[in-house]
Image (cartoon, rainbow, N blue to C red; front, side):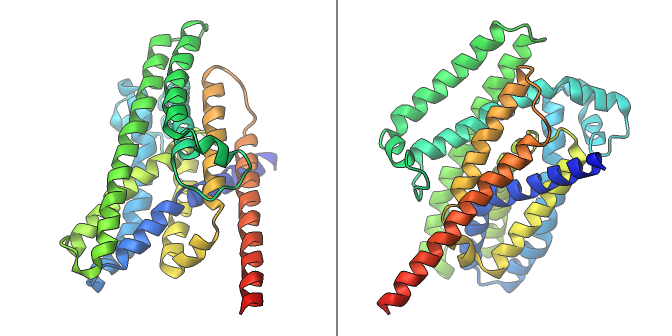
Length: 323
């Protein structure tokens, strides 16, 4: 009974995390879709695009991560991890878990710090406006010190294969800056597309391709964070897949409603920061109960969702009184 509840809690945490971490992606999808003239291109993205996002992107990324963590098992061996059919593959995945954790933890902590110090946001907690005033100075300093600190601790620990772990931390560091650069460039392209509307020089099918590539970049956050919930790849595939479908449907139904929950991004980013910390700690041998990540994620997201609803009610009441 407890085992089934643990699986349910993990799946629920994965779904909630995937939804809130994909909000930006949903908004971009809606904005770019609004500039398309071809109904066929829109329909293709909203139908086949969902299958690509769920089964190709979120289906393959966990296996790619497992393969990169231990190339000796082979790519097809990593694919077998989806169904857990080979006990040798399962053992191999468990053996490289610290490598995955330290790379993923580094990536997620940098993602959280970049949002906290560098990105414009609706301030949800008192300290946010203060730390953002220091912006780039603090972020790049913290990023550098984080990498040095993690490698130093690896060198002074009794962990197996310290060089592999140090390399994994560096890879997580590099992957963050590569994907962040891509996202920043994509944001500029999106602004040009919206400004030009249906008269954009980019064809509708090129926009579909742009959105699919962008979905891969956004998916990395959710897939890496999923390993803080569980290393069982089938659960990651199911949880992230359901979350991706929900986000795509929200994109179609009412993206303005999503935008109105102004603090959801805060909830997503604080969850990402917490999950990054969990992954780093587990890489160094800490044993954290499986229920901690989903419970904290659901609690943090729930709090900021409540803050968003409360603010919308206040703003609605104020507007009503003015009118």
